[in-house]
Length: 150
Image 1: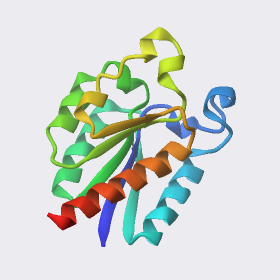
Image 2: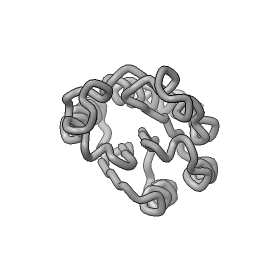
Image 3: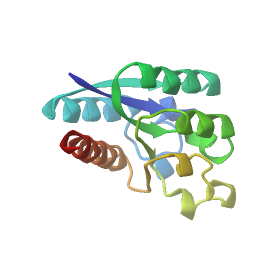
Image 4: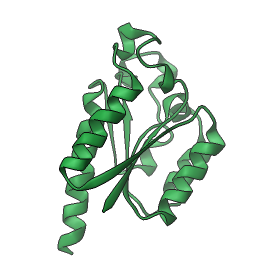
């Protein structure tokens, strides 16, 4: 079975409690369940992970390269704006990564406007709420179909 890694960074474990006016009332568990169900529908196993620790996220990115994952959906949280280490980890693997943000990072505080990680990713989805995760999955599905045609 093909595998997708759903990776979430710092504070995303607090979804539903943390600033619901910005991030909505949905929980990380509900996002994980939704993407897992979408994956199963399309023949993919979805492995869901969340950490507040930069090094752990880097380890998981690197392990995904060796673990047979077809793609990664990644919300790096605040690390988006300053973690060159995570950016380098993404650039150092041969798996397409779609960066996802629940809120529109470009419409918020000025320090959130820059993503140092996005340039290493295949694409970025921002501001569409939890639907962004579903769109990222569909993008990875299309990328996988294109790879199979080669």
